[in-house]
Length: 470
Image (cartoon, rainbow, N blue to C red; front, side, top):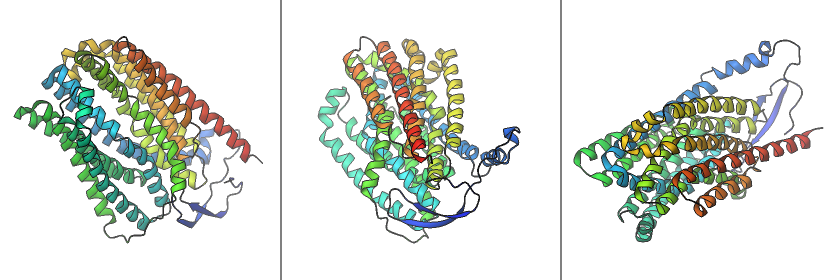
């Protein structure tokens, strides 16, 4: 859609990219940016931009809510792992971490759907279409029920071979299936809150999950349930977060009428390809490496690598909320024909500032951080902590760029992202002389992948600008 060069009312057709539903809205198009020699911050455009940041539904307020929820979930996760590592010891904690990493891997289908669902909800929200939002919610509830059956049955079928490969108890796989089913439902339903920019409800669900995860673990530790208690504590936290977001959805759409959503599966497949590439990459990096280390190295080395992975992911927890807020905002602007570069710049600057601060903390206080997370028995993980955290910083930048590509339907980043991800994991699988070498391989691979994704998006953006030029 070409931008109009006059400030007049125009009829803009907003078509949902994933649905055949369309509506005609009367929107006032923004005026062109004033060209003057005055200070840019004195221009009406800049004043409105700053005011929008601090508005009740602006970037800063929504970021604060998303950050609060993400940090509550992250702090709960840190306390959970710190308690579990101290109570279980190096070997048993490595087993628990491998099981939880397996949960992350089998959640890949749900993770693939989350950005697509968020875009669904964001575009229906732009249309103020409560009926289709209720229809979407009901469809997703049915999908979650089906997914529960698939996860549990699949876990029972593959319990013996998977437990032998990972060297974990056979009962751990059914537990993984149940936990993954609940986590799938929670992620899918939270995507609706994300797309409708209801970050207060999102934060409430995340906080409930983080808090109850810790409470349940403490109870099971006092009962002396060991590894099983750690797995069950994690499950209870996930279940409480699911109940919280489901309760909000019931309250919000209980009185709305239902309109059946007619899905355009071809559009979903095309747009979902970019989202799929992003989720595959961010899921595999930080999870598959842990599973590979658990397979190739003794339990002690795997436990040290798991501790380094936990500490290095501190950085992701500080900045993980930024793409969460950016995606629905850029989606809304994109379908209305507005500029999206400003929101990307805001998000990128915020991410770099927070990530640089977190990386500095990890570098300066690595021993203190490691002791706070897993105790003094994991000092062997200190040489791994900074390279792993640096790899996570690069992963965060890559994820932000990929989220922007998904929101603006620029999917050229997908092939280099997948190539870089699988190339990194293949390098780890082929050459792994030590766990330290694995950490540095992860760092170099993430740097190459980030550069490739950035180049692909830049080239596609320049081509699009050239095509739209008069």
